[in-house]
Image (cartoon, rainbow, N blue to C red; front, side, top):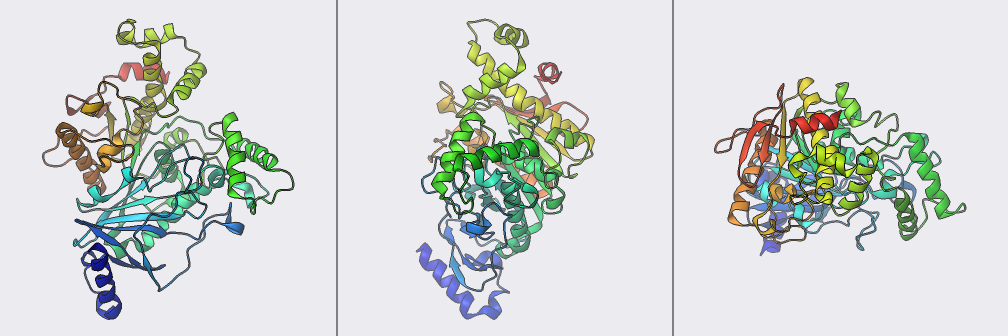
Length: 491
């Protein structure tokens, strides 16, 4: 039935092209873009368009080059299925031909509607917008356009080698995100979206990308608001010299006679894997002197970021799939002992209350995420941008006995996905919290203010150490209970 409806809609549009342009956008799962006529699928109240190419496949001569615009076309394309994830170790169906995005919009609703564009995380070496966890249907039902984007990862996204391109830039993944923003600017009206009301949101590496885009002249004017979830904002970016040194190691690992743009993907992944064992953050954004010129915290301190409305926050527990390694590394870099940590966390000092691992995890979450989020909020508010800070400490009821890793836990609440990989089944109380969180995100995307009817008021962070606390007991604005500890960590 869904396919029949889509084909019927396409027939109407193609046979009556003169009147089709005048038809309300929301009435058909169809969109006329620069790259062709896109036929989507309808499920319930939402139309989806999956696997839309926003740039030429970065293959052969286009490998390790800036993304090139996809050719103009008048052909009909079905957009029922996701494109391939970008090349990475963990997904067997991943491919270099991956510069695609997905669009979700309310069916039968006319625009122009606010646009939310999601940039996925994964440490810049893994992840995909195609995960079922990131299905944009629940957000779109509220009257928004949701776009999720794939971008080049690992060595294909971040390799720096002067022999490859003029200047040797290694920020191809960031270039892809800017290309996707241009695609949205040029095409989103065809889906009922408002190109002048685009909000970027993302977690982890996605949030880092968005902060860099806020600092980049090349993306100015392409989005109006930003939501930074779990951003390690004090992390130092690689210098061009450091990035090029890793690039030389990669080239050596492939072999001196290897043709870099002709090497098989499996060879690239094998060499990448060996280098990641030595330097886990070896393939990530770098300061190339053009697209990226400074660390995030330094750029915000200098007021170089775009003056836009900002939501920013972190999770109470930010450990992930490799959190134990990250925690040990951060603790070693700090020079603190477990006795030092017990003094820093007196509420956990008693051995009966917490193990050394528990305390180290708390330290890692605060040092790498909570304090940097607070810093960026303060800096952005001081620059004149409307700023709202949060901390997410809610654990789904079924998982409170064994919470597991906390990094990215808020994403299920934002997207509302249940019973899919990475997302369990919610209780009634869980759904109530998710509904409120989604409302904050949606309101912010509409107007730059997360507040709305029937929601606990969220105080602005401007000039005060206020934030929205989302806990198992309540959702409420208040003074940051960790303020004194975060002050000590900042020093």
